[in-house]
Amino acid sequence: MKRRIFIACLAFCLAILSADAGNLLVLQQSANAQSSTNKNVIVAMTTSIEDSGLLDDLVPAIENKTGYKLKKVAVGTGQALALAEKGEVDALFVNSPKAERKVLSEGAVINRHLVMHNDFVIVGPDADKAKIQGKKNAVEAFSLIAKNQALFVSRGDDSGTNKLEKDLWKQANITPSGAWYQQTGAGMAQTLQVANQKLGYTLADRATYVFQKKNLSFPVLVEGDKKLLNLYHVMEVNSQKFPRVNSAGAKAFINYVLSPEGQKLIAAHGKKEYGQPLFYTDGGKTEKDYGF
Image (tube, rainbow, N blue to C red; front, side):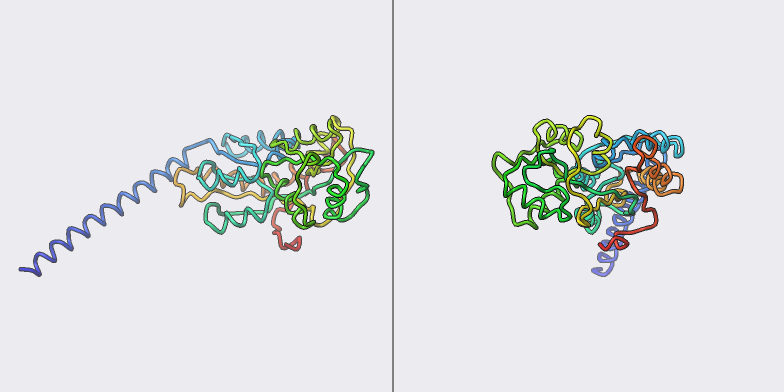
């Protein structure tokens, strides 16, 4: 009798588990179907991609080629990664490798690829109170800015640029504070404008600086340090973790920017207007190719 009761209970439990598994399968199939029919792909990207004008070339090309409507969210890389960790976007296009690797290791994003690079520069007023012009060591330049309490304007927005800036201060054993250190909490273009108006120094990605140069009166003072290399990666948000993610759209976006057509478009951006590309393409390469 007890054996029959045990078998009946076991059969009941297995039926429940089977139903749950079926429900999970239906939910996953439903999410996959939604992903394949959803023609909007939400991409969170660092503001420098927008501020440099690259999006003006990329968006129509991607939409025409893939059939997806690109919905951009231009924010600092830190904010973009936070959106990915909540499953609120489909893909990322960002520039803070260390922070990206952390989110990748946690499983929030997958399919990460290096797309392109440029570099960061330190710009500032012609008067150059800190005497940093021509220095080849960014940490030394930051030390001189702090030593002379020359005005430094920080983005202060947890962007890739801001993360690098914080790292440079840390390497210089300096905690910036006081009247000489100001934060905008804004993107690169706006921060450049504020630094220019206040005759201060700032750290900028070269693409945005060149694109905005017609509105600026200060020069590049420090460049060429390996620490100032600026790598941009794309990645998709993990649809296994966040079923609402448009995985098909994210893949289409990533495949395009890595395709020969996409890489050619990126490499051409800025050449005609400025006599130099604003980004250098890296399709097929990894961080290891640059010693990271």
